[in-house]
Length: 145
Image 1: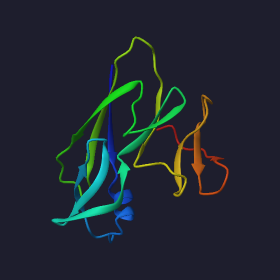
Image 2: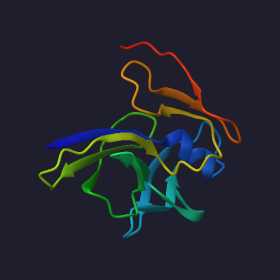
Image 3: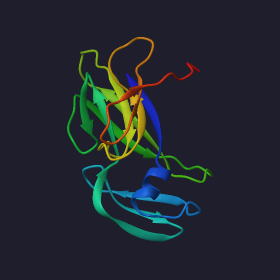
């Protein structure tokens, strides 16, 4: 079974590389371990201070980074677009006969140093939580649509 996901990480990448809001990320360079080593903005290639995993994700409650092996395999495809941000498709594949739960696919590395909204726990109606640095996650209500 294939699952496809689009990652639009332009704002996050821009924050890491200290770019202005008007500059557009057009490409990223990944190393062999699926870590971002540099970005290209307005034709200028800029190396990151340290490589970052392209994304993190959770499989059956255990968190993985794109540079780690996991029960799922994936492939990364760049998407040509006229949008003012970088767009990538990540296609996950379950190669086992087991049913696996994929959740919390998050652009870049979830380190606890940024605010983010993502899922937590197994509650059927409200898994959405706001994560803030050095604080406990807070449950938030969001529309179903």
